[in-house]
Amino acid sequence: MKRAAGFSLILGIILLLEVACRFGLLDRVYFPPPSLILASLVDLLRGWDLWSHVGVTVMRGSIGYIIAMTVAIPTGLLMGKFRLVNTLLEPIVDILRPMPSAAVIPVAIILFGIEDKMKIAVIIFGAVWPTIISTIDGIRSVDPLVLDTGRLLQLTPSQMLLRIALPAASPTIATGMRISLAIALILAVTSEMIAGSNGLGYFILDAERGFAFRNMYAGIVMLGLIGYLSSRLFVLAERRMLFWHYVPRAEATTVEANPI
Image (cartoon, rainbow, N blue to C red; front, side, top):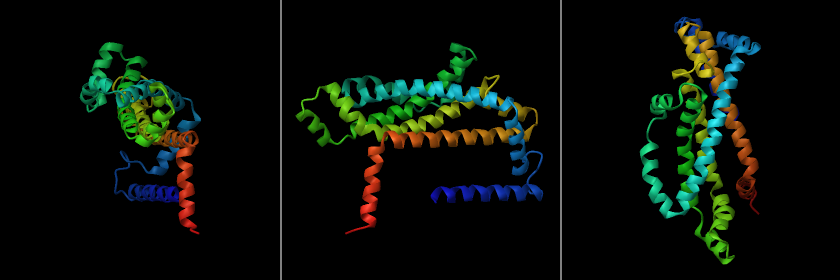
C-alpha cells in the first residue's frame, strides 16, 4: 500500500509534466513530453545499442561494488574490534572519506588510463566508505551482554568476532552496503561521462551532445530503473539472509495489534 502511494505520486508528477509540455509551458525541444520519452525508450529497448551500454555499466558497477565490499567489511570489522587498528586507520578514513569521489578521477586516469580499470578504481574508492563506517558502528554497538555470553562460553577472539559480533552487527552493515550500492552506480555513470566510450553515462552524454534529447531522457529513465531494481533486489536478499532480524519485528507487531 505504501509503495502504491509512492508510485501514484510519481504518476501524478509525470502527468503534470505531460500537460505542461503539451500546452507549451515547457520548451518541447529541451523537455519533450514523457509519453514521447517512453516511446523512445521502448524503441531503444527493441534494439541492441542501449542494452550494450547498460550491460557495460552494470558490469563495471558490480565488479567495483564487490571488490569494495570485500575491502570495506573486513576493514570495518578490524577497526571496530581492535583499538590499535582503529588508531592506525582512522586518520586515513577521516581524510579520504569526505573527498568527492569524482575528484580522484584525474588521478585514476593517470594511474590506470581511461579503460575499465580506471572506472572500477573510482567505484571502489567511493563505495568503501559508507560500508566501513556502518561496519565500525555496528561492531561497536553490539550488546555487551551478548559479548559476555560469548566469554562465558570461552570463545576465542576470532570466534567472538565471527560468531557473535558480525551477526549482531549485520543489519547495520547491510545499511551501509545498500548506500554503497547506490554510490557504485552513480560513480560508474559519472566516470563514463568524464572518460568513457561506452556505458550508460556515455550514452546519455552523447545523446545530449547530439541534441537527441528524447534518447537522453530515455537513458536517464533507464538509469533510474536500474537503480530501483538493484535496490529492491538488495532488500529482498537482505530480508532473506537476515530473516531473524525481521521476523521478531513482525511477531511483535502482531502481538501489539492483537493483545490478549
